Length: 626
Image 1 (cartoon, helix red, strand yellow):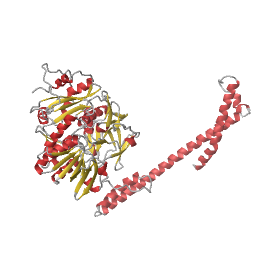
Image 2: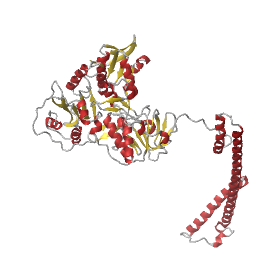
Image 3: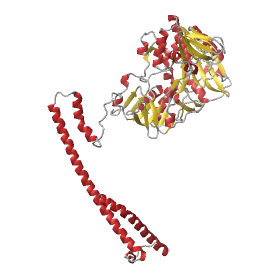
Image 4: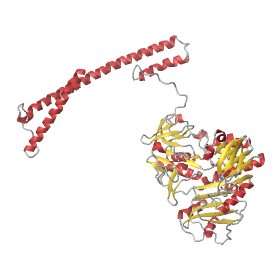
């Protein structure tokens, strides 16, 4: 074989040179006759000097020699491989006989020895060489699928809604949800609302709660039986939804269509959804304050945060909530009611002039603050934290105006940061103004990658580019992303709503851009017993109000014919409608203790028209009916 190769290496340059000379002679003959020759004269193929015939003969001999050499090499190689294969099979057969005799003659050998002897033939047969290393020990972790047709990163509301949508359109779909939390998909709103009003002492274990209408439900979207095991996903004939808990995706290879987990395992996909949600912010002064302060601080987001804060509230004397937005105000009211029973001191501080001062107009924000105080909360307005320290078994909060607050525990409720950790490795664009992954109208970031929920920065055809952090948006955007992952190609036009309850008696629903810096017009009326969150859920049958309203549409809403008195900016804001304006067009609406009217509000924003008299528009919501 080495001789054939050496000969070929010497003959190949001559063959190429001869072939070049031959082609040049043919071209020269064509050029001399000013046309392409129809044939080469026979006389030119002689060994004489005319036309390079001698070189052509050498070329033919060299090609023939090369062909014979190559054929000889192939025949010898095949025979050698066959002989080595027969020897290898004979060696394997002898090992099997030897292994079998050892098992029969040593019945009392340890189990490990038996397993090694039984596995040895297969391992050696698969080994590439005699020096291959032995197979690694079996991993204690369950066998996970290396490929998922539909991969959903994140285990929150958006991800679950997408999974349901995918399965509805593709009944045989195999969906894998990967979440860094230890829990199956669950809804977050009850963590700061209904769970705190439960009479069940084991609520932190059962995570079941009574809605304002008295009906009981679980925080989880579905029981464990709804899902299939991750090990069964690949072989499931009818597909299903599997959840891989406690694992985090740390890297995305968008070109290779695969992700890497925090344990270095890789999973490939056909289509992928990023629904990573957000991470709760903390104050820098707290993060820099040291370990003792951080141990006594809760940033509220997950089930574990609820369990931890519930335990703290039962075993401490004072809790201070920093933040006056939705979450901070809801937790303040919830803990305030508990304080009347246990003597717990609840303090809420924020830099604004009143609760939800960034959302509500000032007069309504001040009224809400008084309502929160009545729940047993000590409210400190216009409070900017300068430093936090731990002294004499207490946390000491110093404000910029010199005030000092001593407390046992801090809850930081100062907003959410969208989780865009995968942007760098995936090469996805992050919006510089609103944060989150920039997506198109179909919620796509790439051809086979979608984003939904808190992490998506989408373009609103009416209100411009936005990012929304509410339950209803997670539900609807997740559902639409799931549809588009199965080929629907639908644009996201939905105007998401959100709601907040300050206990069972005061609540509101909002849609669009609700920013207290915008001009507002509020129309109010006297509230009745049915104008409360509790009465609203009794009527609708669900405590998660967006689940009942997102499927409804408003057509031609008609205001009552009989005029009703308009009550504007009264001291008692029982119920009403607040319109937020931008260039005389309604861009946001808050329904204050007015429920099940969201489709009407959505249509007003969708129409995008100027209204000469918003008092007349308010009549569409029937706020003056008893």
